[in-house]
Image (tube, rainbow, N blue to C red; front, top):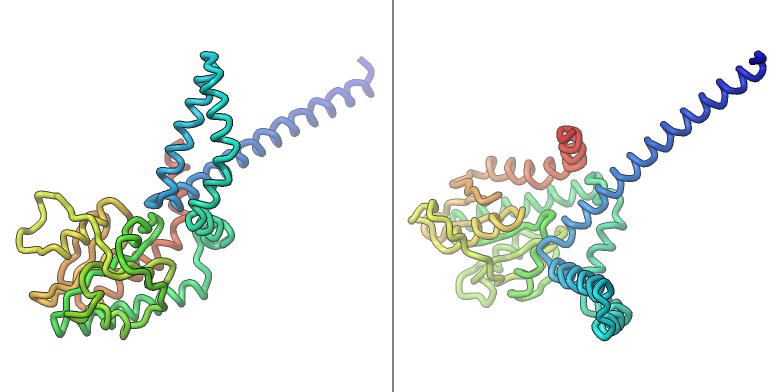
Length: 286
């Protein structure tokens, strides 16, 4: 084989090999990005009515496929109409959930699990307001129940209370839990750095391992932490003790410094580590 032809053949082979590896890396990157986006979308819709929506859509799509496979023309025609006109109905009925999802996607920092400086400052201000109000209520033995939303949505519990959408201040938090006021019963829920609602109902834990001395507030705090990733604060009306419920576990009798550090750890530092933990988990699965 002439030297020129050998060089041309080797160059073509080398180019083909490079293209092959480039395509492989491109496919891997594509899969990783899509997986991460789907993961974030799932975290956004968890705990909202959108979960039921997705289940309903899945049932309709499976029924549509089966009707076509078995030749059920009338059923397929009806399902075609549902799919055609159902999109408009979904946009109208689930407008709040869709808006919330698009807002999350529009915030680059939230999409990739990072917290900007301004967001971190707001979170620390929120924590200071919560700590200050908790200490005030603890000294005066004013009962309180505050659920702070993280990734898992708390909308279904917000809907059981009175909508507020208010900025967080220690004075407002204290006012909400003053005995014999209209909103002192039930839980206050914090979403996106604001007081979303007050006088909300939370699910009670049915765990047999909970101390019998704990009352309804603590059972509700543990209950909501078992079904969501929320951080829930309680102030005991009997003893004034301040506690945090996280992932089904109750951290009891926290002093001011311990409460502040735990909230910073869960609400500020934890969010910063979201992306790193996600990719480390994927690497560990290989």
